[in-house]
Structure formats: C-alpha cells, structure tokens
Length: 156
Image 1: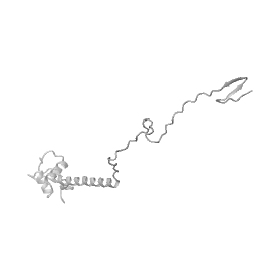
Image 2: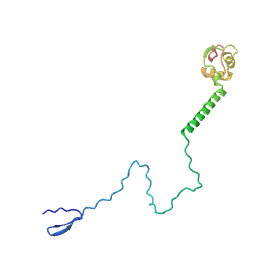
Image 3: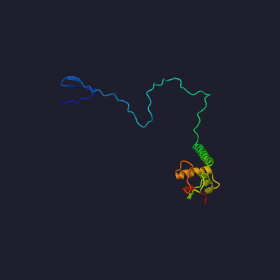
Image 4: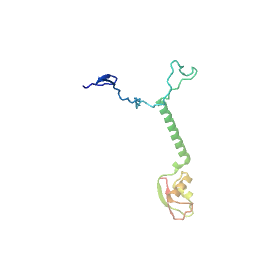
C-alpha cells in the first residue's frame, strides 16, 4: 500500500503514524534591483508619530537654475571680450605693421639694418621690421657686410 505523503500531513503507514517534515527552506533574501538609482546604507525605521523635520519658515526658498539663454549670453559676452583683448594686444604689439611680402636686396655701403628697414618698408615700425629681417636671415647681431644679400619685407 502506497501512501502519498505531503508536508505537514500525518499518514498511517503499516500501522504506525509518521510525520513527514519538509526540508527547511533557505531564508529568502531581498533581491537587489538594478536601475533604481543609488542605494544608500540601511537606515533606522521611521517611528510612527515622530516629528517630521522641515525647513524653518524664515529660510529663503531655493533659487532656480539660470536659464540656458542667459548662460549662452554670458558665454558670448566673454568670447567677445577675449577677442577684443586679443585684437587690442595685436595692435599694441606692432606686429601688423610689418609687411608680409619679401624680396632680396644687397646691403649698400654704410647702410645699417635700421636704414635698410626704413628704405624697404617706409611708414612701418622700424624695430619690428629689423626684427623680421633678423628672423628671415638668421642674424644674431646687427653686423652686415657691404653687398651681402638679405631677405627683407617690403611695401609694394
């Protein structure tokens, strides 16, 4: 005689009573759900009737963040200021006074670099033109030989 034994039921088998005990179930652990934001450490349970902490009535409300249009406007003003300062610095430095075009000339007898710069680029900043002549010809000093070919900037 076969008897169906279920947990928690008592059945008679061959004149004896037996209790069938189901194996103990492991305790269910809460499943940690992903995608629900940052999980913090476990806190204390809230006590019913405990006072709720709120801001004082004399506290100022939280300010709303600045609108995007205001931020874009501020960025544009800053960009224009930087551009203006760069243009002002370029005009003060005198780098724009040096002509871009160059030619090769020979040094005349008794001519210095500043006289050559004044002859080839009249109306330009003489010191800036001399610095450009030194740069173009890899000169370290102001000594030049008569008849020496030099690449110099000139006005057309």
